[in-house]
Each structure stands twice: as structure tokens, then as C-alpha cells.
Amino acid sequence: MATGGSAIRGSRVGSGPMGEQDRGYHAERVAVSYWDAMGNETVRYFAANVPAEEIPETIDSPSTGLPAGRDKANPPQSAKNEPYKTHLAYVKERRTDEEAAQLLEEALQALRARRGTTTAS
Image 1 (spheres, rainbow, N blue to C red):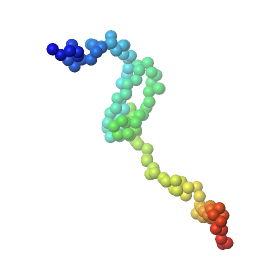
Image 2: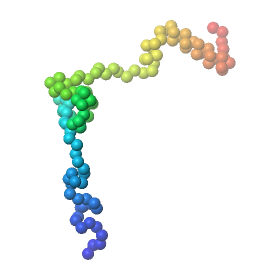
Image 3: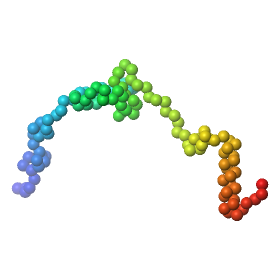
Image 4: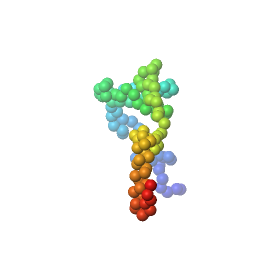
């Protein structure tokens, strides 16, 4: 005869019938459906006492990452994604070529002065 273990195989200590008496009272809720541009539906649940203006009009679809709205016939379109810009691209937007050449020359002169290799130009 085996010692220890549960009287009912596969059950845990403290497990019992699943129901509201064990888990508490469930608040009333409303289901709101959202659709993305690919036709995927996502359902979100909100408490029934939440004002309608606090329920979001759009969410991000968990399956596609696209914006999803409540109108199935007219889902929101995704915003145009701009390509990644490097730091140099942003600097080039702010500086003209002449300004860049002047800044480079000033930086080189400062570096040469620190090293003691200043040359007459």
C-alpha cells in the first residue's frame, strides 16, 4: 500500500467544485468587438457600469498589430510607417552642407590643437 498522496488521483490540496461560491461574484460586463483591416475580430470586455465614452474607439489588434475599430465595414487604416532614420539623417535635416563643413573644420582644429599638431592652412 502506497503512503501519502491524494485520495483522488490528480486532484490538488484545497481543490473543490468550481463555482461562484469559491471564486466570488462576477460583475456584469459588456463585450465590445473590434475589427482590423485584415478582418480579424478581437473582443474586449468592459464593466457594464463604465460610461460609453470611456470605452476606446480603437485598440491595437493583438494578432496583427494593426489598429482595430468598432465598425466592421470600415476598420481604421494603419498610419503610414516612416522608415527608420539614422542620427546622421536627422543632423542633415538640421544643417546645410556649408554649416557641416564649418563645424567639421572647427572640430578638426580643436583636435589638432589638443594634440599639438596645428598646421597653418
